[in-house]
Every structure is written in structure tokens, then in C-alpha cells.
Amino acid sequence: MAKTWYPVIDYLNCSECGTCVIMCPNGVYDVEKAPSPVVRNPVACIEHCHGCGNRCPVGAITYVGEETGWMPPTGSQADEEPCCTCGREDVTKKKVVIDYLYLDLQSCDRCIGTDGVLDEVMMILTPSLKLAGCEVLYNKIEIKTEELARKYQFLSSPTIRANGIDICRTVAENKCGCCSEISESDVDCRVFEYNGETYEVPPKEMLAEAILRIVFGLSERSCTCINYELPENLKTFFRGKKNTECSCGGNCC
Figure 1 (tube, helix red, strand yellow):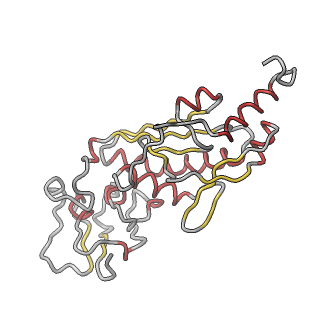
Figure 2 (cartoon, helix red, strand yellow; figure 1 turned 60 degrees about the vertical axis):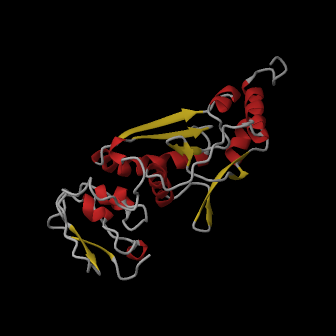
Figure 3 (tube, rainbow, N blue to C red; figure 1 turned 90 degrees about the vertical axis):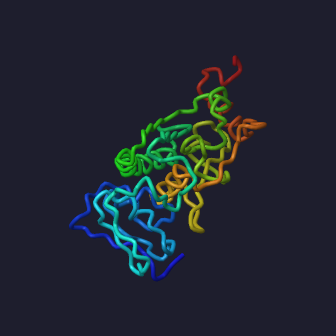
């Protein structure tokens, strides 16, 4: 990382296409301000990286500390010189699929809150991803039964996946009063860990960062479908929910 190297935006020429924001893998730009390019974390920029500058269609990006003779290409070199994401599939040919999997959007504060935050994040990211040539699909999937849980390899609620990858590398949970009440049993639901803090409803910054890292290949892929088993916690939820929905208390089921 560099303290004397970072992008400078010529806002008079900037077309606010958002390409620089979504193409940067290092969190230099504020994704919440996209498509407007706001440099939030200049020290995260890689010294002598011209990734965003090479992709700017109007040549509105220069760099503090530039001594290499590089000039803004106004988009002409965008396909010739890769940025820090070199070696990966061209993002302009990608399909971005965001899946939101949850147990309940009627009573569970955690699922409802995360749903609202994810909606906001997708409203911000989708226009920029489309401008970068991506096809964006946003799905909401209610996991109503054990069969659906097994079909989607569901581990914890709520779950957010980008191109099939869980944005959380691990499953962390604590007791969920709402889902425990729904099922009349003790049930744990997911918590989100970010920058040393634990959240029952994730912050927008966390979701935006995690989604973009996966979309641009910056997160390690991990497969959870091998030897998948439905967690006992979810079995308890579905069993309890089934019993509460049955007028006989579950004796006929």
C-alpha cells in the first residue's frame, strides 16, 4: 500500500460512470457514493497502479506521486493494460447473481433488517455494475422447508451469496428471539462479523465490500456443498415451526 500514491479525480470532466469505483479491488473509493468517485481510503491504493485511470472513459483520473510518464488514456487503453485484477475473467462479460436466503420476513427482525440493508446496497451497486457491462440478477429465496434448505445447501439464516459464494467465510450465530418464538424452541440465527464488531444486521459497507470482492475474484472460493448436512439448529426450527402450524400440536404429522 502507498501513502504517497493515490488517484485524484477531475470532477469537471468526470462522467460519473462508476467504473473506477467498482473496478478497484482495494477499497480506495467509497462504494456508498457510487457512481460518483469519492476517494475514501487513499493509503489503500497500490503504488504505480493505474487500474482505474486506464479504465476511465474520459481521462478524469490522475495520480499523486505520478513520475512514470503515464498519461490518462481516455479509455483507449482500457483493454490493453490490466489493473490490479489482472489474470481474472473480464468483468464486462460477467453475470452477477446475488441470492438472499432467509427463514422469515414477517417476524424475524434479523432477516427483515438485513433484507432492507441489502436492498439499499443493491440499489447503489446495480447501476454501476451494469455500466461496467455486468448483467445483475437479484433473487430473494424464502427457505420454508427442510427440503428447500437441503436444495440450497442452507447453513444459517440469513445468508447472502454472490455468484454462489457466501459473503461470510464462516458461520457465526447467537440466539434469535424472533425465530425461537416462531418455532417455540431455542434457535440461533446468523450474526455478521466486520472490522472486529459483531452485528445482527450487517452494515451497508460490509455488504458492498464483500459483494464486490467476490464479483471481482478477490475472495477465495469455498465449497460447502460437499458432504452437506442440514444443521441441527435448522432441523429444530423447521420441526418446531411445523408443530406450531399444526392444530393438533404436531401429533398428526
